Image (cartoon, helix red, strand yellow):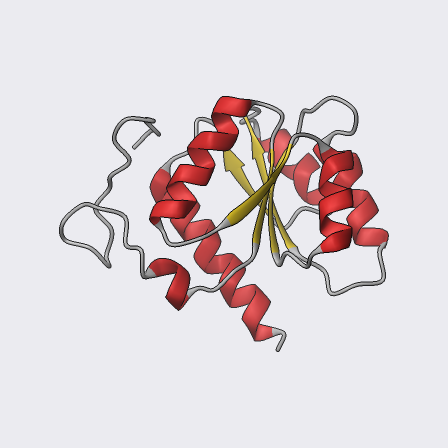
Length: 153
């Protein structure tokens, strides 16, 4: 299902009503940073995550992401790849060089070739979402991220 700003609904294994389960964030507690230069994309992903029970922070480029990340620990970053000032690849490489507990970074990109996915992984990202974003894919990747983050405790 493709994202629609008007109706963000999907049937999940947790919900027979088709509405995104707000309990998802309780079951998968994550601190999420959204990094995307497109305002509409930012608001759309914020809304989806809010319906899952998350409160998020947002940055418009990689440099802003690094500044926010330095002030607050986020264990998941949804990182757009192509952005002005500092792209997602450079921001990810910078984060990976930091002597910190490393976040789970999920690339978000309209580039859908297998080589694009490989480039994301080679630059230090843990996973990949292609745009337009599918709600079930977002949920699936967040479950993987939560398992990863909490298996290290």
